[in-house]
Structures are given as structure tokens and as C-alpha cells.
Length: 640
Image (cartoon, rainbow, N blue to C red):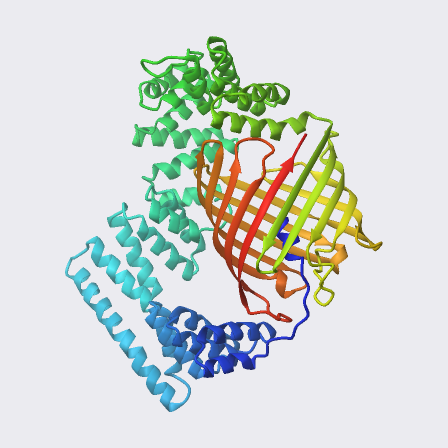
């Protein structure tokens, strides 16, 4: 939200960049500027094939063959009769390893069009087709002579696919797979070809088998081609017909059948896995649990003994919990704390709480145990006790434990308070705008144990130029106080909806204006030492022509602590757009940054970043299409 406020701080009138600027830049051999101007011109005329062709030729001058290919392809789509664009597109397809598509276009062009086009297309077609035909003939002859190896069938299938003989390609990809079922990547080729010839269900079966085949690279490629939804039961069954030895696929089907309450069918799958893969302890344990639930203890016991004697200690303790056997701590170092860790991993939180309380009795000054107790109580929805444990842990002499407990205590305490009062302020300076901004808010929020929380708010907006620059007023940075009332949802997986109604009152004059705003906010941080910090907001503001703003900020980098000071070195990747398509609110930017904070509470966070950005919409932009911004700021928040 802070970046959104900063972005809406300026409104400047200017003129539209004419399309002729692209051709002027071409004449001056300023190809980067020409590309940028062509892209801007295409926003006003997206159906213009000539602009796309000229952009494609410009891309060729800079060596960007794939980008040029795509633009020729779009020009051809807009004007299918343009044989010159078709030729250029086909040649670039061939050069960028899309031979099948190039061959198809050359084949069409050699049968119609002008004599020169036909001649060029015929020569290009033969240059592609003759080697493929020769390869197909050579591999087919090898098979006739009795060479039925994996490589022979696979190379024949590849050549046939590139020559658009998809039926032959499918036949020999399948034979290659049957010869060497360990080559899971062949299933991807087979699925791709089956999809192209209309065998959709067979294609999903092949890709599903590859995605659960145990080979990481093939699995990732297969997932990219599969539908975004989770597979259906019959699709798992089809995949197993193709790849019956795929125990990972069969195990997953077993658990899916369990979720669908089809226990008999699930048992059948787990029986097959435990018979064909005795080392699969998870399937053995699940089959044992199913048999125990049906009273077949004698049949279940050998399976569960297999797990108890295996090397998966966590799974063995889960079996012991079901059999009401005592948990086993790490060999040579049994302790309540270690037992608690095992219980946490196995998902037995109540047992973990009991072991941690025992560990606390043994050593009341183990602040790590206190911190763990806070987490477990929070997960068990005993927030009142969790707040008490975090309150004790934040007094730890270990700065890392104290800081983590402090943060958890501050995050959790408001959940148990009826009224929460908070305040924040963010002064910052930007060389891009040559201005200093200051934003802040004081907020009183009521916890009524409802899906939404009402609150009272007072926002403060100020800058150093809004009162002294009447020609270019800072449109969203007027000096104003904005009291308001609002509703906000609880935070759910980092997301929150909110809405607010109030009035903006200028404190340098007597001007007042109604103000309605709201939006969806999301934030999430992953990792500690190496981290990824994502913040995204979608905002609506009535006071600024009912504008809507959306932005996302990403910081990826490295965090290091020295004493009580935390340093974060990161790379920014930000994007912003608005519904009014105003130039200053539509841009992307990237660059390095540094953030310095402290583990001590109520201390400000200093940040500095050097960002290189480009406007994605340049109508009425009086500035250059790109910018460099040195951004310096402080962030201070206070929750009494």
C-alpha cells in the first residue's frame, strides 16, 4: 500500500508519443528506442500487421530472432494472405528449432502464390523435408532388418513428428517406451503427440505417469503440460494401464481413493504396492491401518512390524501411536524435548505439548522450549496460553529467540484484545520525483469475534512540494488529514479485504472532500536467511477520479544479523498499473536494495534502493520512457 500511495503522488499533463517516433528512431539506428516506440504505437493499433512486421524487422537488427518470429506470426495471423510475412515467419521457425511448423508453412506456400514465393518455398521445403524423409527411411529399414532397440524406434518417432507424420511418431514413441520404461521423458513425447492427434485421454495418462515417475526433470515438464486441476480417479487408472510398475502413481491413487471413501479399492492398490515394492513403508503402514480398522490384526501385524523395523523413525512412531506403544526417542539421547520434536513431525500436537511442559519443568530457563510451547498452544487454538508462553520467551538472553518470541507475541496479542490501537509512519525521499513524502495512520480496531472488524482511522499525508508547485501539483500528496471509519476482514493466508469511508481535510487550507477507499491486500515472506518477500495490493480510491491501482512488490535476497541489527540485501522486482492508464501509475522497475532493522521493539526500519524502471504506458508522459530512482525511507510502527 505504501508504494501505491507514493505512485499516486503526481499528476502531470503531457502529449502522446506519435507512431512516427519509431521510424525516426530507426532512421537514427536507435533500435532500442524504435522497439519501445513500436510497442507503444501498437497499443493504439493492435490489429495493424504492418506495425508488427516493422517491429519484427527491428528485432532482427538487434539479433532477437525469437521475438521477431513471434511478431511475424502475429502479422500472418492478422493478414493470412501476406506471403512475405509467411516466408519470414517460416524461416525464423526453422532457425529457432520449430522445424515442423516451418515445414508446414513452406508446404502451403509452395502450392500457391507468386512464382518467386513458390520457388523459394519449394527450395526451403525440400531442404527440411529431404533429410527427414531420409532419416525415416533409414530408421524404418533398420527396424525391418531386425533392429528393434530403443534408440531406433525413438529416432524414427522424432523424425516422423518433425515431418508431421504424427501417427507414425505415436506408434514408435509407444514402442520405444515399452522397450525402455525407465525413460520417463518418452512419455512426455508420447503425450504431446497423442494430444495433437486427438487422443486426449491417452495423452493425460502418459503425462500423469511421467509426472509421478520419480525423475525430477521429466516430472516437472509433464506437470507443465497437464491440466491445472487435480487428476480424476479414472485418469490415474488409465495411467497405471500404461505404466503399471509406477508405484508412486499407484500409492497416490490409493490415498485419493481413501479420500473418496472407497476403502476397498484403496486397499487393493496398497496391496499391489506392498507386494511389488516392499521398501515402500508408507504404503505398508497405510495398508496395516486399514486392516486394523477392519479387525484383521493378524494380517496387519507383519506390515506394521515392517514399518517398526524400518529406517523411517517418524513413521514408526506414528505406528506406535496407533498401537498405543510408547514413543521412541533418538538412540542414546532420550529426552522430553526430543520426544516433543518427534510428536510435532508426526502431527501429534497434544503429545508434543505434554512433552514440552515436562521439558519446561526439567529446565525452566530453556527459552527455546518456551518458544515451542507458544507455537504449539497457538496451533491448538489456546491463544491465551500461547500469549503467556511467548511473553516469557521474549525475555530470553538469546537475541534470536527473544526477537522471534517478541514478534509472535505482538502478532498474537491483538487476537485476544477487545480493542487494538496501532500507529505507523513512513517518511521517504525519491529522486525520481525530487520530493520528500510522509504518510502515517493511527487506527483503533475492535475485536468482536466476527468475520470482519470495525475500526476508526486517521491518515496523514504530507509532502514538501504540494504547496509550492501550483503548476505541477502532487495529485495524491496534498497536505491532508483523512479521518474515516472502516471494516476489515481477518488475515487469511496473508490476504485481507478492507473498505473505508471518510473525508480528506486539508490542514494548510479549509478544503474538505469525501474519501472512499478499499481493496485487497496480500503479503507473505518465505525463508529466513535467503528470503522472498511479496506484497501485493489492489486499491480503489474515489477521491482520485474513482481510480483503481494494482501493484506487486517482490524482494528476494539475503538476510544477515550482527548483534541486534538485521541487514537485508535484496533485489527488487516491482510492477504497477491503474485503471485510468495514467503513465505515472503504469510501470515496472528492478534494482538492488538494502534494509536495516533491529531486533529491539519499536525501532524504525531504514531502507534504500536504486531502481531502474520503464513506463509501460506513455500517453501524456512528459518524461523519458524509463527512469532511475534512488529511494530512501524510514518505516516506524507502534502497537501499545
